[in-house]
Amino acid sequence: MSSGWGCPHDSSGKCQRVENQTCDPGMKGCVLAGKFIFSDNRKNTNAAKQKKSDNS
Image 1: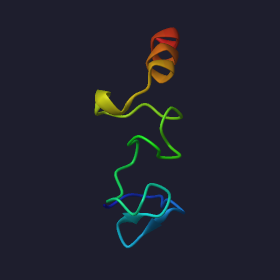
Image 2 (image 1 turned 45 degrees about the vertical axis):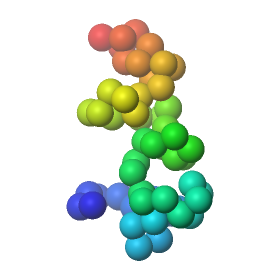
Image 3 (image 1 turned 90 degrees about the vertical axis):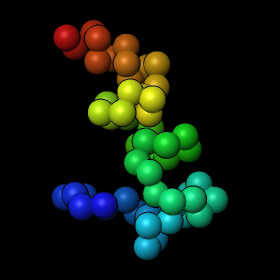
């Protein structure tokens, strides 16, 4: 993954928070879930979707 930030739970592409699964920002259990709007709508929580529509 190429980006300008790094997750403190990512260790060589594996998530240390979600049972060593491949790091996939926004997946269930991820610390980013619900805090950001993702381009993949399946990763967005209902609260995040509501917040986005309130800001539109």
